[in-house]
Image 1 (cartoon, each protein chain N blue to C red):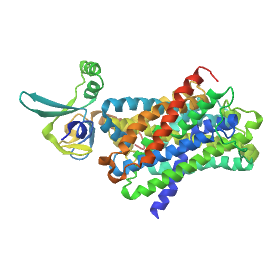
Image 2 (cartoon, each protein chain N blue to C red):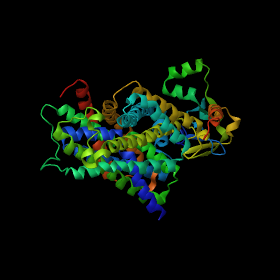
Image 3 (cartoon, rainbow over the protein chains, first blue to last red):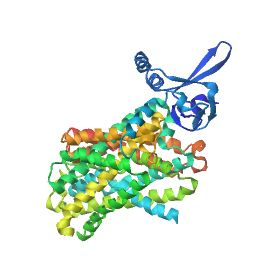
Length: 110
Length: 403
């Protein structure tokens, strides 16, 4: 599998096809004399920041922002979207979406 | 039968999408200042936008993903983020121009200064987005947009026709920088980057599949050609009515009475309604397009078919864009000058979107047997490249006050 082409920057969805974010980085363990071992996929602003510029990533981490890691073994399907064996509510990834949703629900017509 | 109806609606929709404050402002100025000698720019821009619109629909219905998501995936986060930033700055300027168009139309009718109308205009656009679904909203705006046909009537009644050889490009002595700048603005107003994102997202929202390939082709070709016809009618009417009077259209107000010869007392309200409805429709499209761009890059829930609360960050995105878009107009920035300038700037961003887009359109892993023909690639690359070169010469000259 070509990781960069087929996995990185793909849409990440949970087992109910709920959108969780993008796959912003891939964490692998390099082992001497053996092929690298894929450990996690990462998503979130801190991972995006590091990809855009190392210093931006460092600045975001200093402010307490951390990428959200999902175990590589949780990946169920790789297509244009990457499906993981998780439910959105088990993760903090939709916290902002849900907070905002509670505010919007108070406005008529939402 | 259902598809024939969709084509009809699609064509009407394209008119709504095509004729906006940008094509109003640039066509009025072009006709008043250069007669028929800038019609080639509308033709060139329209040819390019027909290709681009058809391609973005084809890409969406074949891949089931909108253009923005595919660019992010194929070209990576860095390029995608830089392109997003550029497109969002442009979208904000375009949105401010469209809000300015609505506000100016309100000023023409009520006499109350346009800056006071900026916030109510933005709020009205937001309310429409909040309460109506994608399909209803699109059709309502498009049908209202047919009021712009008043300019076709005006052009016929004024016997607007180019003199022999009057359609050919001619760089007027002492005004070549202004002529070039206006040509760039016209092409920019015709090929708005936001239209690609809006159209491909719309194809996904309306669940187009492979069976819609010919519907997509018909809507893109006929709709854009029909829209271009209205832009040309505005230019022709302006050339026939305003040019002989020496009116150069430095403001919308200068052009506002041009329909009175055809419609008498209804002339001014019709002009205001045309400008207002076209700008209003475009404001809806641009604010939605900006929200699509943000949500599809970040991987959030998106979609106008969803309830506002079910895609809350998407909803917040268009709300914030509208609030920001109202600011320049509320501060009194001249809507016409802002519009013409913004449309020229669009040409500088176009290649950075178009060339990656063309690369996607030639990828068999995405489009299978529906990749681009060679001629479509040449046509789009040629027009976008040429316009970019014209823009990097004409824009600095215009800013430096050259002629």
